[in-house]
Image (cartoon, rainbow, N blue to C red; front, top):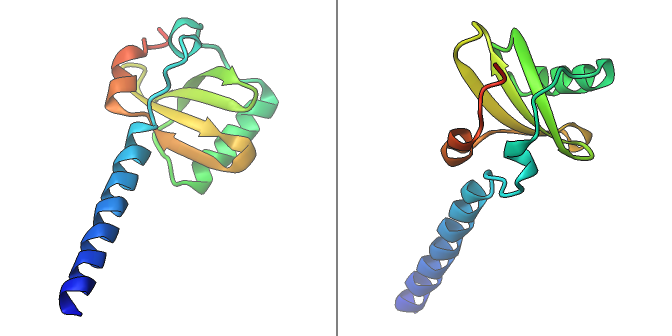
Length: 113
């Protein structure tokens, strides 16, 4: 009986780890438009939605940001406080989700200027 419980715990642990790894790997976007399209300033409506989302998720240091809209309601955000050091986020304001871009994705993105 104990051996059976240990096997079940190991199997559950394995699937939990695999699930976590796949979640982390999903933060890179493979769509070419993500990297080829130009950065732009957010419209007033986008600015309101994205700023609200950043505040809700305690994201600070974004005195200036530029965006790329990949699909309707999906954005890549380049954020800086000094114009030199950039952080990148993937955001879905319509469903209240925002994530720090993966290192692999960050390497592919060019700074707004």
